[in-house]
Length: 332
Image 1 (cartoon, helix red, strand yellow):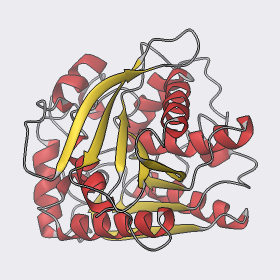
Image 2: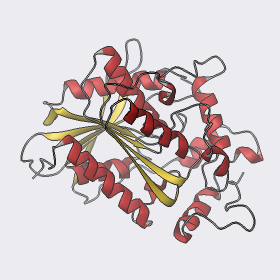
Image 3: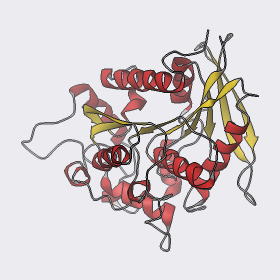
């Protein structure tokens, strides 16, 4: 089973940069495609599997552990990243949720991104391996995400972090979880959160934006993929309109932390990200939407190979530092 044939409609200019097109073609080559047959969670997980990280010299140390899950649920695996060397004061704390449509990926697939967040922000990063669908449907993943955030925030001082400098972050489905956790923390009187970094997040199960049509195929991640992921996460009887499932449909966005949304041009999810940024601003939440022309869903995975990915990561980490540290990182 191969990926969706890459490229725009015949005769139309390709909105991707030439380098981005090469990366998308390579990513699409062996990734299961719903246009060619039914998707299978096991096959998708095999296609997205990453090798365990090997020790490197990136100035960041990581350690795996488990933390308590929600009441009655299993303990949660997490990976805690810490920059090497002393810090001038308490570090910021970033709780990160990996993407993968609530079905795929794990701590290893997003190890590189978490290391870069820790190194560039001088932050402790707690990456969370939440329960996955379809074995565990909504609200399992988001309750896990909230439990891990509450655990990390309650132990910020023990982690040598600033309790007032706690952020949540994630990409696609992880961005969905990060956005939902800010709503849960507000609604439940939970941990105070200082920022939310949403990387091409999945925010609205309806996939009603124009980008879900214009970029439905040809850019690795397809609208059909996303519909399948939503079906796995919510199941036939899930509350699709629940704000913790679809934060983009939340009726009240007041009182949430500042947000940065990083959006690729060629992504079925782009327009729901735009809409969420507008809705946050309308609710009085400081929100910035950064859109990168000529890029695709998941493009931050191409740092070091794609200049736009390098620029987006630098801008995102600079924003986190400025938001969490009042203009200056506290690490030495």
